[in-house]
Length: 165
Image 1 (spheres, rainbow, N blue to C red):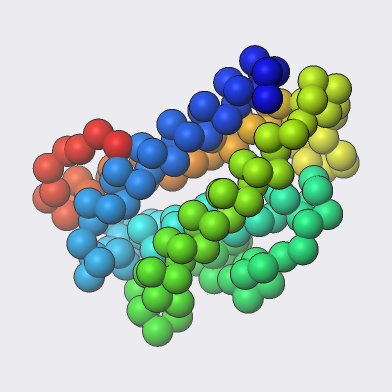
Image 2: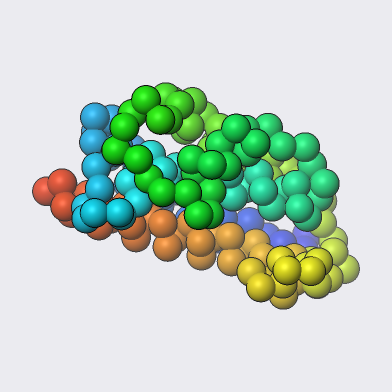
């Protein structure tokens, strides 16, 4: 993994996940469904969404089989709406574990990429998300950062003191 471009992308993914986990782990479990405003994402939805996003891209870019995505797409992926009902979701531990496992798999999948792969364009409509495999890694980290900002808003609406990831 001597490729500086790949290392920069992986470092960015590591940073974004660390920041995310620093905030998510500071939200009490009984507040994971708290919405700071009507229709806003809550922490449970965001965790499941990130788990689904990693899995979606591994499938679309690497033809890797879906694990939880098929079961979770309707509750966590694009177009789904956060529900205030805990019974609509798997346990927080299951979602956290899936999120961690999917990221671990994604990083392992990406690590062997060489410069040719990193600079190659994404297929079809995925080019709307990023132009190359290298920029996709950074865009994935940006996506996680955007949702980390939503966690910050959730925490603020709960009156929790600020933390850094």
